[in-house]
Length: 169
Length: 220
Image (cartoon, rainbow over all chains, first blue to last red; front, top):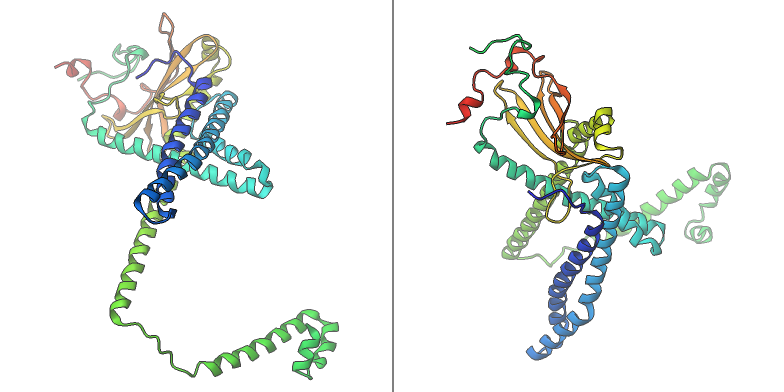
């Protein structure tokens, strides 16, 4: 496990922004290359050229949109952590909804509500994937555990005897 | 609208007086009148037999297509449903790790000794992932020596002066709710102080006592 010396929070925003940009660039590149390939006039060289043009034109925009989403999401997440003094799945879900809402702010209130709902549901699904993954990995890990002992930090309240009123046989 | 209807059926003005009395009833009558008209029309055209009957091979093909689409849709719905179930279970069930963590964190923060030691604004968080997320709280459920379901959890606290780690163990009582066996906070300072908030190990009924194995048995 890692050290807990450094707070992840303010720096995480930059991290997430960059990660989302990369994700958008790669994903958008793949998507746009296929789209450009199919929409181009026939002929292999023309198709490849069309694919390349589509990537050049569209995928930076997609990456930028992703980066804005990621940065906004992370900013709100950090703000929520600061306000709520707690880190749990609610933070992600609320900040996903808030991000969706804020980024659709120029399209009017109904669009904002729709986007906020979609953002919240999407982040809830992502959280669900995380929860399921940890649960599955925990179940796989379970049988190899040794019998659990009580931690020693509590002191020998039991082993000291007397107070408990029981004896070891 | 009204003049048109009047041309079609000269007897409608009779209804017109009705319109002044109850407009709703009038509208309903007109609608019924219209629907019977269209119904007659459709029955008259249906007398011809349709000729575009598909051969059996195409029908089978179409059916398999429909079934495969249905299968894809069902799988999608199933996966989404499972995810939503997991999320809702985690967020709203009182026995979910997240809610146990919330309650335990609240107890720790409200405790004056913890507050004195760690410093006032106390933040709680779980294990940190590589991407800087700390939402996942480390926990394990196991069957204890008493044959009951136990849940052991660990989460972190960060105050103004010190950080700390909270450990807790809960067991499922007869009514199926979780109860604390212990809950303590270990402060990460030089002395490694522990603040015990709850320790019910001795007060629990006999079945909860460790039967015989202790630390000696674990060292082979």
